[in-house]
Image 1 (cartoon, rainbow, N blue to C red):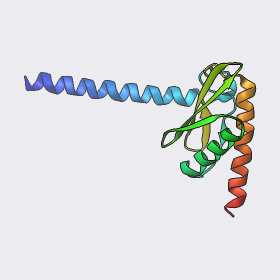
Image 2: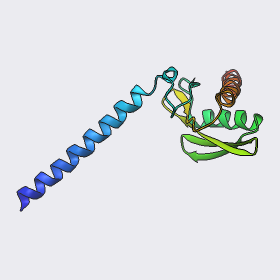
Image 3: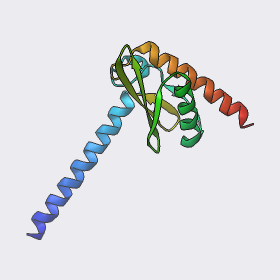
Length: 131
C-alpha cells in the first residue's frame, strides 16, 4: 500500500511539474508581441528595472488621462475599463519582469496604442523625476 501511495504521489508531482514547465514555455513563446497573438496586445512596453508599484502608478495615471477606469487587480496587474459607442471594453494590464503586457479581448487596437503611448509618456516622466 505504501508503495502504491508513493507511486501516486510521484506521478502527481511529475504531472504538476510537467504542466508548470509547459505553461512557462508557452508564455515565453507568446512573448513575441508582433506575432498577432489574440490574447496579447502588440503594444508591450519595456519598463526595465522599475518596481511594480511605480509602473502601476504610471499605468494608472496614463489610463485615467485617456478616459479609462483603472482598478488595481493584483500586486502586478490592473484592469482598465472604458465605454466606447455604448459598449464596455476592458483589458488587463500586467507588469512582468521587465515589461508590461495587456490582454486584447475585443479592444480596438487604436485604443490599446493610445493607452500604450500614454503609459510610455508617464514612464518617461517617472524616470526623469527620479533622477
